[in-house]
Length: 216
Image (cartoon, rainbow, N blue to C red; front, side, top):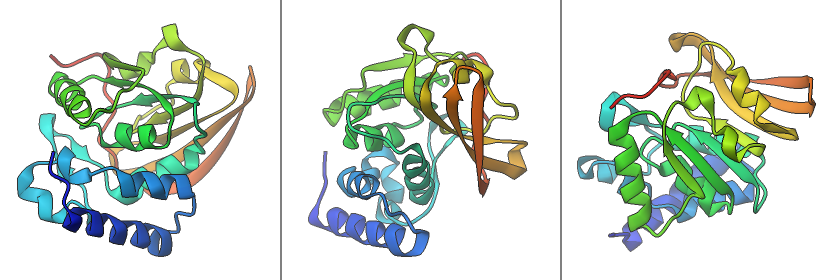
């Protein structure tokens, strides 16, 4: 697992960019981005560009999100050490690694078998261990392990998955992009009471679509 001084220097520059250009102020998020070697989660042909604010293709016709998107979603989540976080869409495992670096207890679900296998192997190689890593339908969440303090959805959903809201603790937060593929908006839902949800909106994004069931 090669992580050179050059990589570390580029990460430091990325953190400064996120702090000053994107406006990320959560020091836990910035420290996690600084710690996690993003280049190890993408194909080596993109390695030189790993710390630019760009998305790259990964397996199963998916993409690794822009570092700014990962940072913004992580900041909106307001993760505290030891909180149970459900991640819908493990992808290549980069966002998972960032959450683990923030000392969250991560439960993560991926519906693409290629990505599930890749992320499981990659995280293990890096000695990063989610509490539970599952191949399954993200819309169903992980009711066995509910309730969660926080839920992060890394893929766009056309409608709000109400099953996920049920798995959120009172006082918990869910960050999710919602809407049709070309015009998704990033939302944060806070569960005020068992029946009351507060909704905040954080601008337009473009995420890969969230899909039902699983793909072998």
